[in-house]
Structures are given as C-alpha cells and as structure tokens.
Length: 253
Ligand code: 13P
Image (cartoon, rainbow, N blue to C red; front, side, top):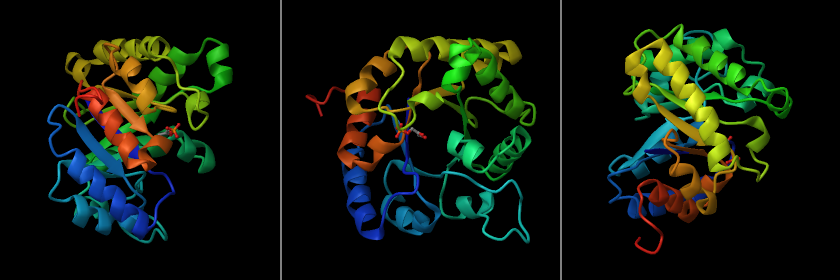
C-alpha cells in the first residue's frame, strides 16, 4: 500500500514545520504502508531536512521533460533526486489541462523521472463527459499505454499509476469503492495484457479521498493506495488515511 499526499500549491515554512513534525512522529511505526508527501519545489530542502531520517518519503508534483539546459523556470528530475525525492507525480490532470501537457510530454517526463531513480506516479482519469459517454476504460488505458510505450523497463518497483477521475478531484465527490474498483480492474487487466510483470504495479486512487472514505476504497482488491490532495494538508487526517491503508483502525492507533 502506498499513500501519497499532493500538497499542490499550498504551504508555508511555518505551516510545513508542524505538518512535517506530526507526520514524522505519527508514521514512524507503520511498516505496512508507504507514506509520501509531494511538496512544492521551494520547500524541498525543508522537507528533506525534516523528513530525511523518517519513514515518510518525499516527492515532487511535476518535473521537466528536459534533462538540463536553457529551460527557464523548469526543475529537472536530477534536481529533485538531489533533494532526496523518490517519487514524481507526472501528468496530473491539472498539468494536462492548465499547461496543455501532451501525451508525448508526459511520457518523456516519466522517462526522465525513471532515468534519475524517481518513481513516476502517472495520473490518468476521465472527464465526466467521457464517463457518461462510456469511454472511461478506453481513456484511462490509452493514457497508461502512452507512457508505457516509452518505458520498456517499467515494473512494480519503478512505476506507479494513479487513477484520478476528473469529476472527483477537489469536488468532495469521491468515486465509491465499487466504482473505483471497476476502473482499477480495467487498468490491471490492460497492464497484464501488456506484460505479466506489470500485474503487480501499484494503482492508486485519487479524488476527494478522506479518512472517512479511505477504508471502503482500500478494501477493493485492485486499489493499492491513494493520491490525496486537500485532505493531505491536514496532517492528522493524512495520518488516518495512512493508518486505514495499513489496516489499522483509528481506535487502535
Ligand atoms: P483532492 O483529494 O483534493 O480531490 O485532490 C486529488 C488530487 O488531485 C490528488 O492529486
């Protein structure tokens, strides 16, 4: 199980300090779940020093498709790795729509991440219109395959998928466990059809995940964790989601 917090463009040095402190202390003994936070770039140094010795992993929310050079404003995978990052969110729907990221750019970013030892967390998901038109399976499996075409070495250790239906992001309307499971099963079948070793690739669910809805999601056979936006900004809530993933109820924590 893997639970990843995507802080998006939130945080300040003062706020982060208490969040990091709580996460490091409360997640110290959760060996069955990997917890990762993806912070804004300016806070990587602060995150590295606060979490470096803890069991909480560090990631970025995006990286450049370029390796190095004259690319004003961009941050490379090598730089993220230099700050101790182990993960990079790639192709989040907010990047796809706000920054017009194409399938080839997203695949290239995933490749750059892999080249520098970062596990790409590749986001896929359908819009409400696509869902209503019955195109969900086609949309998400196409998005996965576009990246895998460029990553022949992808496997369970170095590749993660996050299924984030666009209609569930930031809306408070999470997919139900059963709804999400249907799509996760499709993604799993498509991965298996491509190569046997891809069967164990982790497929996370994202979209309005909260502590109160986490257990229903995590009990599904093809949901291997969560990518959490808003709820990850409340450190205690994020801890509760991680505990739900490790099968520990809040009463036991
Ligand atoms: P919310 O959890 O705020 O819906 O965001 C989901 C998301 O986009 C995580 O990457």
